Image 1 (cartoon, rainbow, N blue to C red):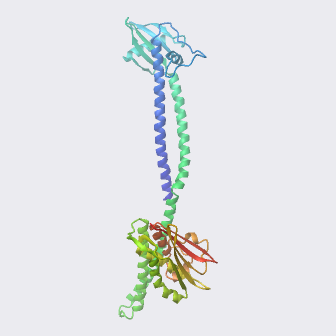
Image 2 (cartoon, rainbow, N blue to C red; image 1 turned 180 degrees about the horizontal axis):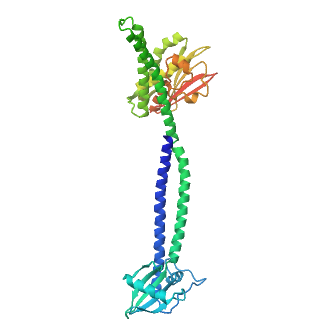
Image 3 (cartoon, helix red, strand yellow; image 1 turned 180 degrees about the vertical axis):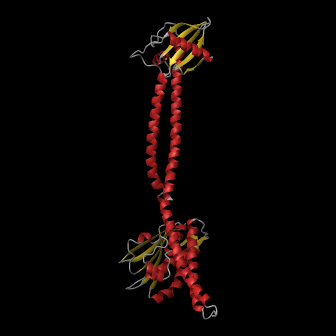
Length: 419
């Protein structure tokens, strides 16, 4: 999928660049063709203004430069191979080659005949490779000037080949540039695609276990239809417990999906974060007491922020639950601190015990990630809690981070902007 997307990205870029280059070079060719035609027409007009037998002036080396905007038609005419003929009563009576070109009487007569046959005052003679301009004199004679188009075709052919080479080289260059840019542009997409596939695989795996248990328990119950509900209470209880676990997992998945899609409903109010954290600590006191964990709170009063109270409460509970679960010897303790740091609120939840290995720290907030998979499953975790905590923090424009080492223990830090 990513490979097809990359190929499509490169192809679209090449098509757009190729179209722009083609249009630009086509305009250049058209402008140059128009310029060459104008130069030939100037030369034709110039030779018609001369008398028969008059020579075309030649370039003068070292001549004074022309003023800006001034155009020397004589000089321009000398660059174009031209000749003229005078026709009277359908016959060529004179040829003026201006001492510039050699033209036979037969060729001049044929050119004059074809030019007259067109019935136009100017045009092209493809068979002879000439451009002509016709002028009638008051005496009733016709003067026709001819310019050789070989130099036009040669100039256009050279320019066309140059443009073609530029087009090919530019397309090749843009292909490699597109290849490089596509890898950069699609890197986040590729990462998201891999995360999505991993997410689906992990979710399927987590849902498979409770579904297997539910199916096994219901199978046992259905295998004994004569038994009463009381005799099957154990299996029904197991089924209900697994269903609750699965419901919790699905709710967490829906929360993360809505958060990713920016459809998470929030009800922002002014929340006293100190009171909120204190309220979250109360339910954990008996849990911590049973686990032999000391709970310590250092909460600065009067620190408020604009946020969703329900989501903030869930964030604190996730971090507290995580800290109490993994607080370890020699003196299991969890310390919750809330302070003001410049224009931000700083919430830290620290627990003692074995540190989290450094290679796991960058991945702790990824979905379904477990630093200790076996321990999490026995304690009912799915690896979604910290991902939800990160999502809630970012929804409140905050940042969450974690540090862990053997000396200081593990500390989760959340920074909230006050406004």
